Length: 140
Image 1 (cartoon, rainbow, N blue to C red):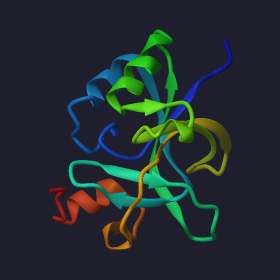
Image 2 (image 1 turned 135 degrees about the horizontal axis):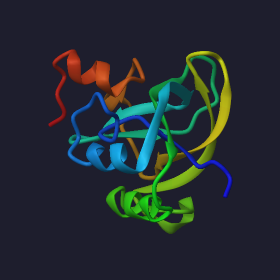
Image 3 (image 1 turned 120 degrees about the vertical axis):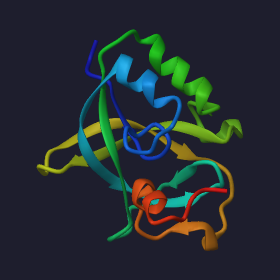
């Protein structure tokens, strides 16, 4: 089986205090901080990434390598209420994207992409959910 990477940018991050991050620690190995192209939006209790390849539009998160059972991805799909295609109408879909680590290396990784409309006033300009939370701008 080829390496399966997962880029997380919200409540699954180790530094965001989400309840489900414990599952991440048991089934995945934290490779390091990383970024991918996109815009980040505050959706209340969690963020959503909308794809973008525009210069300067980056989302910060963590890159993980699946080390546990392949069923861990299916468990996360259920947690994220995700589908494998945007045409499904699900809130999120899982897509392969290029992700850059802090050392400049690039890998292809699964990313949960937000699939519903967003309001520009909810955009997290920094692209970093942990920074957003630490700035006292807690989710609703």
